[in-house]
Amino acid sequence: MKKQDLLIAYLKELPREEPSGNFTQMVMSRVQLETIKSPVVYQPLISKEVWRKVIVVSGLLLLGAVILFFYLPGSANSTGYFTLPNVDYSIIFKPFMVLTQAFDKLSVTFVGILMAIGSLLLVDQLYSRFANH
Image (cartoon, rainbow, N blue to C red; front, top):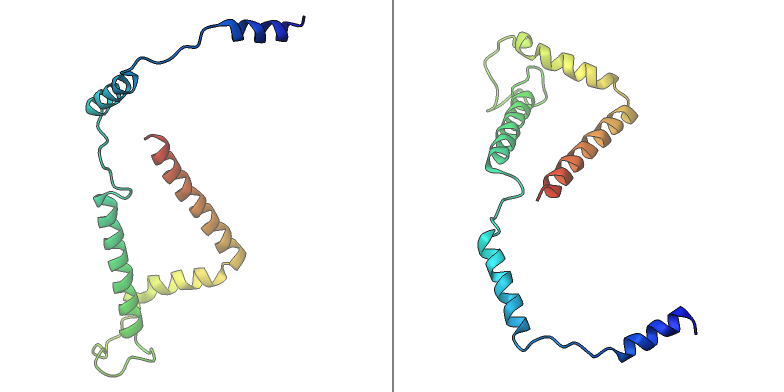
């Protein structure tokens, strides 16, 4: 006989084991003890501190967009209710103009690569946060 046949014959001769009558109750009591020892605490995916930062940054961006759109001298909407007095604000907007000129020189491919890298970094941060739990 082969070893496999001998093993099968031996296993057939063994008596069947059955769990005790209160097996399920004992397992569930241990599970309850484990949940009491280390209860699951709710933690939001995005903390309140991060939400505050997102709101502040979004508000600043919105405020900047409104200022640039409605109050920028020489813009199409510079007449009417949203205009400021006739003052030269070019000193204030000079850094913004430098930034827009710098962004005009960037290629679409480069911006796409930067966005892809940023997305990968974000996914990495989310993955590492969930891996620790």
